[in-house]
Image (cartoon, rainbow, N blue to C red):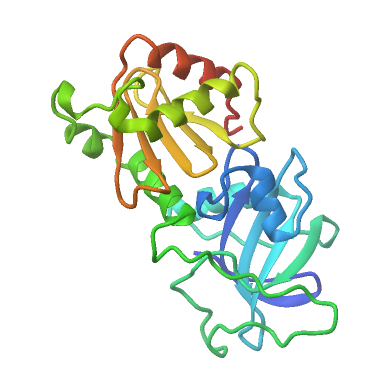
Length: 261
């Protein structure tokens, strides 16, 4: 579990940490890496950041951004294995301490006051706060795509027969057609910002693709089908059959996608 450490000369009770790189970032915060960085007031450097979330001795919420991505990645890997890891970024690697948390946490540091935003000081930015994911919108749409990527087999089993698939030329699915056209433009005429197209490991030799755009998200396996979610259709998930076009599109998207190091 995260342990109590010191950051930027102030004691910080570390609760968790996340990576913020073009290939790995909390999808709930934005459709691409530059968008997420902008929301946090950070420059979208290609090397990325580690975000350390914790509380100070008064219980106030703080998010520490560090350039030591490897340190944060090692800590996350250790915690995922149930091991302890002292996460203490060096002072020279710290980009800034941001008030608030950009993500909702269900944990708190022991023996300090309950989590709260720090008292604002003149010139301080507004405290970070998690996006509203209760009502359907971009944040919940991206969280839905995350869930499909993590539970691919479960969602894939729900697709039964050709009638379940939305096809690119089907007038009943104009939103799906628009998504596929915009995704195709990513590999032809309109290269996307870093992080709009991400590729991660899947079973066998396949890759899991995560593609986002204005008002939509797509999750796909390079050897299988795709699922599309749209802002304008709350809670709806559209399976897209492979057909003659999807395999080539997915292969091209995978070629330009950023991948975790």
